[in-house]
Figure 1 (spheres, rainbow, N blue to C red):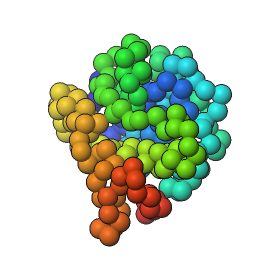
Figure 2: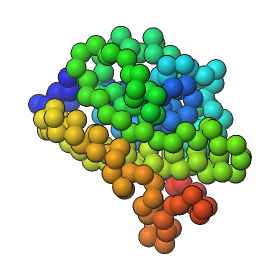
Figure 3: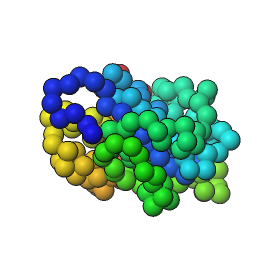
Length: 194
């Protein structure tokens, strides 16, 4: 269970999706970078792919994260470890989420699967949008003072991030003149965090 006192132990966050090739890898990479020191992160999948999707690696590289040496992991690699938070990023993982020891907070941040899009240009757009959506959700998560919230408030707050309009990528991202992101507009390059 997450510590609600003054502990400075990093909180442990596990991201789950089916193949651990795109969405959960992106979420792990983003929280690893943005939450360094505050969180220990990992990701896994029920049916792990043979490699992280190259477009996920490229989209993360655009964000200033080198994820080229990572590989997908199966649930057996992480399920026995203690986790404070388990966040699913796809519907199948949500429905088939394994029992995790202890009492982690579960949340669903379902994100559309960018790997299933046939057209390469639209698929690249989808990967970039996935990075933006998950980056925004992680920013919202990092804004929550996890150590000071009660367990139920953490649960509600994390679940709400996955449902909030500002976390779906349809709000303004970056400078005010960047506009909104829609499926018909090109996505502006992602600026790496400072």
